Length: 430
Image (cartoon, rainbow, N blue to C red; front, top):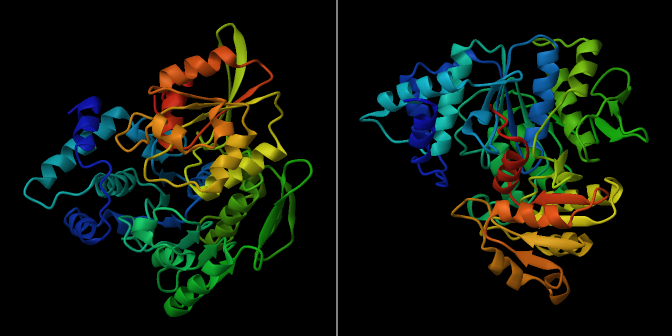
């Protein structure tokens, strides 16, 4: 198989099928020689912020000279974005070779889901590439997530909020219980713990597993200062004021603090100099998440803010960031979400801020129909809303009405953001 054929073969593995459980992944990895056992891993679970924490760790550890792998999901436009070492995504040749090899291996064996397959591919590739450190992001939940076959050096649990309730539970306590499933015996845990209901659940799991727990706000903290940098109070040692914050949004002070706390735990294995820390923080990138892009379009320069806000907590964070920053004349909102998502009142709050709204859908069978979204809007919002079935037409519409002082915000789904980003600047994994 070539790169395109490998992607097509992978797509037929029930892309949107969710099958919680570890049996298939464990069985297949065992037959492949358990490549995960050769890796030094940081395991990250949570509802929001996993990718930002992982990207921060990747940048800092890479700046410190360590060959660092990062497995993340979902991707924006190419599945190869899920697999990277440092700044390099897996090459089309390596990707095609691994998919071909694993497809041959799977004949006569249990068929994995899409996510189980990509997890196995990631662990095998990192082991064969001799990655010194690996950052592993869960897909859904934690306890029964395919990535939960590893024993990491440190576990990180980011902010927890309601999402995927049909799989993880309808209460924050239930969701926290699923996320806490990544906690392993005697493995230190770094936790955001900002939702009060989740903390007793995390604490109980840590006590059960005899795992040291380090809570944001109690054992370490970080705040964005007036210059836009980070003032960090570490688990131990002197405060670290005026650290760089490359990612947009005040919430990134918390995500960056989680990464820095994890690095303190990792210090005996992966020491990082102050110079590498600063350099790494300066170069953190996490595309499609509060990402500003300026492009020349229809003989004028217009600004896009791309954010994969796809649940109630993510939209609330986007609203807060729009209120605190991103100067603009008007806010033009391009929106499309998955049909199974309920954003609650915060979506109407975001739409109330917008001067014009274009509802569209990503190229996905799960995307909500724009007309169905329109029917759910209050009458005042409908008056400033247009619907279109294609992302290309949505960009054409917003490009016609946007002025250089305006800000076009694209949000609601990472699949939508990925398609818009692809159309504006091309694929990430070229």
